[in-house]
Length: 372
Image (cartoon, rainbow, N blue to C red; front, side, top):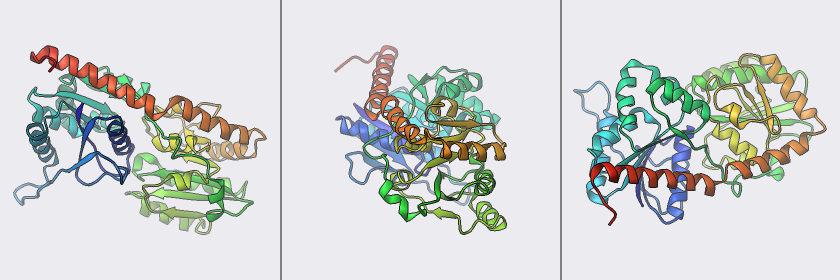
């Protein structure tokens, strides 16, 4: 198939999923073009995926750059030039509308919902109606969790099928030899990775870690960057945790950090799936997370624990209890086995291929197209 994928290029889960899916599809013989404003952070350096940079010009007459129109123009040009059969957008706003505008019925449209495009931006009247219309005109829809699919039905009146995220166990695996770079032998090594948006509640994590440090020697690695970083740095200083918390810049190779950890911590107030948590599980790292959204579908009692949002003391106690449990090493083994069994790239990529095949069949039946 000739597939055009659209994504945001940064640290968020939607960009990671789109970039890696593009690569896996190309590995399976499809021709794949990936559209973004810059080369996506997690797109492999060696890949047959063709990256298309969306140029967003800025004219003084407009208050902000018009990304949605620039994307539509890039897609429309690629439709004419490359003969795309499918446009698959990741994160609905504004990608679904841009793809609809570009396609004019000439190509099958598939959209994957990832989280705040439904739960936050999707509720905004400025975006809700047009996005709903674009989604309803698509030939294929998916969401990354059952929870998000249910919310999408409420917000947009659509029923996406559920295709969870994937993780490559050959890339994400335990790396005990790397542990000494970050922690002393007597310290528990805790990790969090995100784009540091307010919804991730990273300042909460610092407060939780302060509670945990009173009960157990530990170090905390924060992997990423974002708007909340200055507040996180301020709080680390205020609580006197400078010697115990290390902030690492974003890296296209998070597996080198995750594989060294003992426990992954996720404190989000909204989370449709939790890609970083899945990558931790594949690395043999159990997860303690807030009991929200699609995280409930990912973090089972066999591989981690869920804690009520805002319960800092309870979160810290749960983490300490796990780390001290005589069953902890078995939990680490279960975490990796669980990720390998339930979220392999081959199965998830095949699910998207099936979605494409069904979308193409629907498009052909409504457009009068026939198989070549």
